[in-house]
Image (cartoon, rainbow, N blue to C red; front, side, top):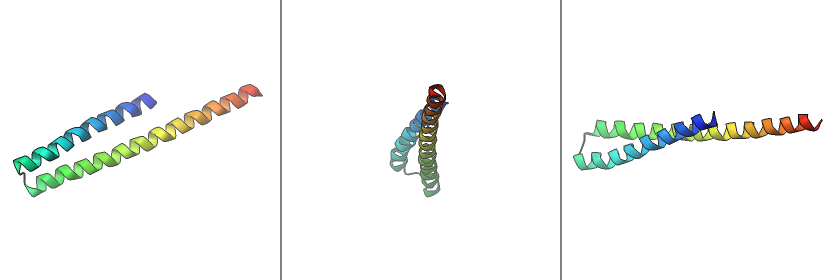
Amino acid sequence: MIAGLISIAICIGIIYFFLSLGDKVNRTLNLSHSQYSTINNLKEEIERLSNQVNQLESILINQTLKNEELKQLINDN
């Protein structure tokens, strides 16, 4: 599960990288305002999704630690 979240985060990072490059290319190509706006909206959405993946990863790690603590308590009793 953690590996899946990490791979999703990596994919989002790669997409974000290419959109950042695209941002520079857009300025060079002088694209229309609507095209430029669409790319910026996609970039913001990817940032939001990346933050959500990071939050889910933290929650999953914390839950895994809690599960390990519970297992240890059960084993101690």
